[in-house]
Length: 177
Image (tube, rainbow, N blue to C red):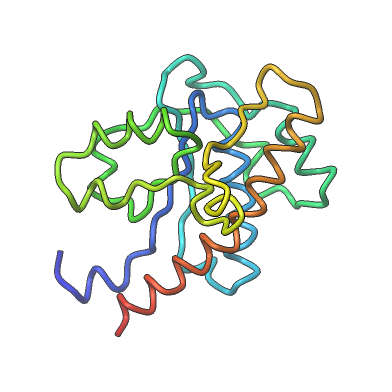
């Protein structure tokens, strides 16, 4: 891609979990809001996907939308969300792929054909300094839990969100320098 075209296209972030109805949409919607708040909403596109096709076509889990509403978030796409599966070809266009847990990281890394594609795949919680220090980078899967499980996952997403925004801000600055 010509450098001038690369600079003008949005930076693309994809959050990935298993079915694309709980963790990854939660991360997607929180990040969209954070990028808007940071003044980067017009430069960054955030979406999400799953590693499996079990939930393809389904909406976001109502408990995901409920935890966001409980925490005062506007709707950044939750009501329109349709689960989909991550496709290998997306690694050519996505700039940052955020895996919810180590299993997703392994699956996404296997899809990558080049070192540059593998370098795009990171653990979502690797952007949370406390998670890095503790070595606990897996995002809890709330699917089988109650509201408190969704609250825990929400806390993990929020704790990493500012680090993701800072990372993307630096990447955009490097791209434009």
